[in-house]
Figure 1 (cartoon, rainbow, N blue to C red):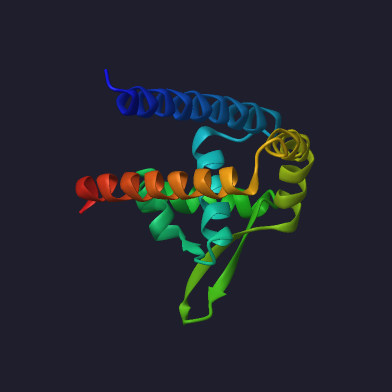
Figure 2: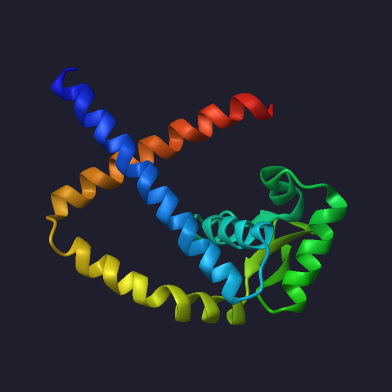
Length: 155
């Protein structure tokens, strides 16, 4: 195996391990807050969409989670009632509602994930800005590849 192939294999293994650990931490958070697996996945996707400045809708969320419209309505209603998320009118189309993390949900997430953020910051402080920029570029490219790949199955 070439050195390049070994590096790619090692990187792929590390990403799979990171994903597995991330999923485990998500399950712990969900269990501590009486959230189902779909609830947590919905929260995660809403946070990612909000962070990207592209709020999601219940319809897009249902499609990404593979849920029916009725199941998504039930999930969103529960998550709104529990204070994890809120609905807001879409500024571009007032007939649509977008989903956002609510202050209570964000507070719970910060309480749980704050220590992980501190550990992450501490860990990353040992790397140069150049290393972090390169890693960010690699991860962005891999995310884009996964988005392209999953799109082949969805449409």
